[in-house]
Each structure stands twice: as structure tokens, then as C-alpha cells.
Image (tube, rainbow, N blue to C red):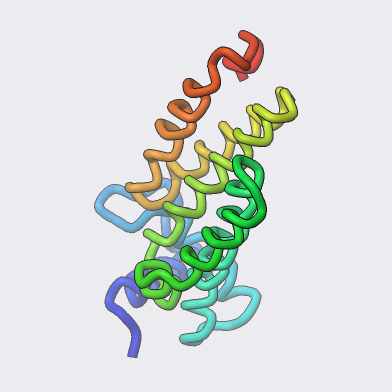
Length: 171
């Protein structure tokens, strides 16, 4: 059996594949990026229960990988490894990584945005700041709760405002 949200997202993804879904129509519907990714997985692997849930599994794995990289970049490898294991075996991570719901995108985009911005601060690279902004921008097309990634990314940058030149803030 599949969860009702999985069924709804799968129907939207099938409608995208058939060309009968307006990609700009997200009012009162699930976030469009989750539907597009599900449609892509359906196109590549066929329509079945495993394919429906594969997207969430990959987002969950990628979130933990970027969490490890973020904590290692900010602190050290030992703390990064501890964070990786806590993130991997937490109840919420397991629960949301096993069903296809758009909320699994929220922690992914948050961690990805913070990781890219932390690299930008460390390397003083303008392109990494722009890439962090793009990552935060992608969160706008995902789960509603992921929209906080841009705000938290800005807060993260504000914590390092003395280290950054004006040109990095413009990016």
C-alpha cells in the first residue's frame, strides 16, 4: 500500500508525463519540483512503488552526505561523522526517507545551501555565493517549509559579515 500523499504526487507526475498538467499551477497542490522529479523517475524507471519512493530515499541520502560535508567544513571530521550517524538514524529521517512526500526536500535544500555558503565564506569565492543563492532559490519550488532555506542562509552569512566584502553580499 502507498500513502495518500504518494498517490496524489504520483497522479500529478503521471499528468506531467502525459502533458495534461500545467507546470505553473501549484495553487492548492503539492510543490511542483517534487512532481517533476517523480515524473522524471517514472520516465527512467517505470511506474511502480519502488520508483515512487526512490526520490525520497535519494534526497535523504544526499541530505546526510551534505550534512557530513557541512559539519566537517565548519568544525572537524569527528563531529561530522557523529552528525552523519545521528542524521542517518534519526526517526524523522527514516520516516520521511521511506515515503514519497515533498517535505523530504526541505532539509536537503537547507543543508545544501548552508554547505555551499560555508565553502564560499572559507574560499572567498563569489561563484559559490551565487550557487548558494541558486540552491536557496530551488527551495522556493519545493516544500513550503523549505522556503526558510534562503532566510537561514542569509542569517548564516550575517554571522560572518566581518569576513565578507561587499561584492560577496551582492552575489
